[in-house]
Image (cartoon, rainbow, N blue to C red; front, side):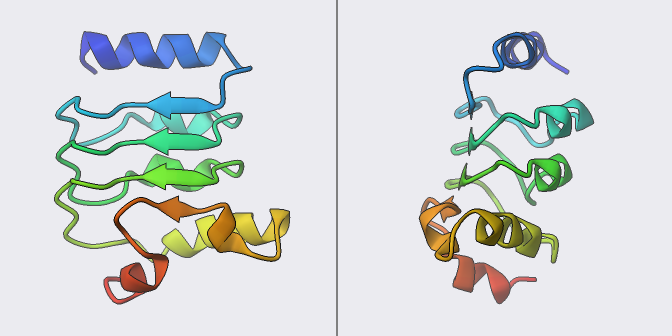
Length: 113
């Protein structure tokens, strides 16, 4: 894990009142599994990185309502993406209000599953 990413993880672990994880423009290709333990996170911004798939650890974030994974190199999307929609349905009758894929529509993702 690079120093900048380690510092972000430490900050987010210490400040549980901040539900936002912003990792844009960090040239990331993977996220460490520790990020899946940040249960208080509601918004994750991963835009402008080098991900080829949605990091597996994100599927554990039951409070996640915004996922920005725009401007990456997604080649496929795990069927687990539906877990994020399921979590949103537990909070609202309109999951699209909670799961926002910036520049990536949920229906478009289903074609890549």
